[in-house]
Length: 331
Image (cartoon, rainbow, N blue to C red):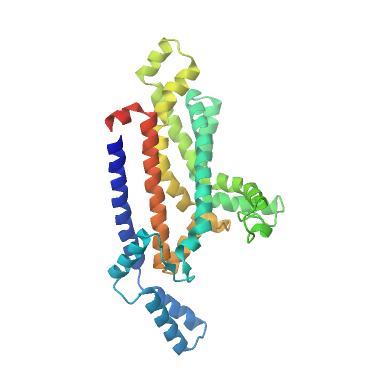
């Protein structure tokens, strides 16, 4: 097991190095650069041409934008390995400072969404498989298909429409009430966030929960048809022991292995929802950085998302090895 963990750790380092390089190249690929965008913005504001030239040259010198892209990548990567994510050229602030609270809220909501998905989808998928072709099964299958078919941002728009037209709400978007948006963190602000977050968990997690219900149902049906389940029944084991001790531990493997993939998907997939509901999450910040060609901020966010994916996969593999002895022996 130690050898396996060491191998995975080395793989993580290689993956992160490749992602850092590829992310920097992709962000650099579009025509133009931050200085071109800055010059156009200042020109539209009727700023004096001499001031524009001096401002552009100041940014060029400050961020080394006149250097070759490979040299800039090397400097940024070296700083990143020392814990410095660089500066955002758009906001003229450290990238880590901009990402700080947004990233913590994004991770918190993503973990809560995964828990919501797991707690809701696994029991429903099990019940649907155990009660195959019953009214429960047909109802859950229909709801799961509906949840998979409707994009999360459509659900967010429908929620906004219903809140305004039926409930007469005036402030339905956001993660906090207006009086807590700019306030310092306190117990009252935390409680206010809990009042809003359950709606966001439902909207963001609906699609993944629906797809997980379908996967859990299919896997449970396959597992219940295995010979060892028939043997357990012939030995007189109770239904609860068969379902939870024998069938569930095997059927749940694909769901656990997919958690590592779903974590960054939830973060990136909630970007449009975050824009619709004006949520202070990392997705809108990444979109803003890409549109503004803010290379260092965009690449830093992409690296953090990749790190979440790699760590999530690693933890999912460890959980699988703990649940399934066959995986431990293979490794």
